[in-house]
Image 1 (spheres, one colour):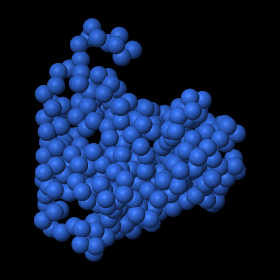
Image 2 (cartoon, one colour):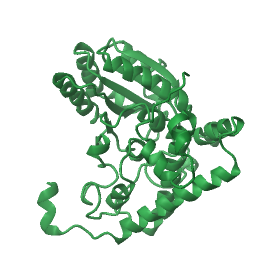
Image 3 (cartoon, helix red, strand yellow):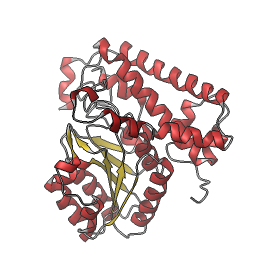
Length: 344
């Protein structure tokens, strides 16, 4: 991959995670480290959500993306702040990688007035307009036309923005995916459809839901530039997304990116669920060996960019940020009943 000298658009989140550790220059100039910090931060945040979920203070279900962090990091660091993303029910990492406010996210989970939806949306309805997180939606495939519409507006206004629709492998089985893909191709819209293929729709594997064909062909049949890649390789994700962004900004139309990855935890909730039989422990272990966070850490260690001391500093700083955000969420007030109309 070519060297990238610009500051990644979500490096402010990475800098916040490493404040006081002296890594700012590296984060501005070293893409692998920026990707690693983003992934590590998302992993620690979701692990803490899982750890605290049993306290029954969070007032919503949570769909965690532990194991899938390379996709959110690679995609969102390839975007500018003014670009917009639309996410799914598994939205936390997308929101955070794009620069969404952690305190507002956790407050939302706790049903607090300081949450990004005033405490009335929960983890599947999070957004941060200044950061370019347009919205997240829980209904499978429902965010795809929203991102496509955002891209249409961008083109009509003549603005050099890009819209990204995150979707899972099950979303390509919805008619709205094909309708939006066709519309985007016909009008050469600056939209990127990012499919996180984690092989399962809840408990149903891809192989019993669809023919044995590459998912990228679904994009190609609509005349969209399409590619499949390793979704646990953050640098590959970044590179392919950057190419798709460049195409979109140049007026060359949409792209369909399929990133193969794997969620470690249950479909919804904080636990491991291999015991219920829909996937084997052997399959799980094969994917866990390809931990995207661990792979990047190993690469940085080989390059001399990460050692035990620096790792400890990163973890301490990230964990302090997380603890402060949870304190904020727990201390925030519940919404006032009289303000319900503000969010109706």
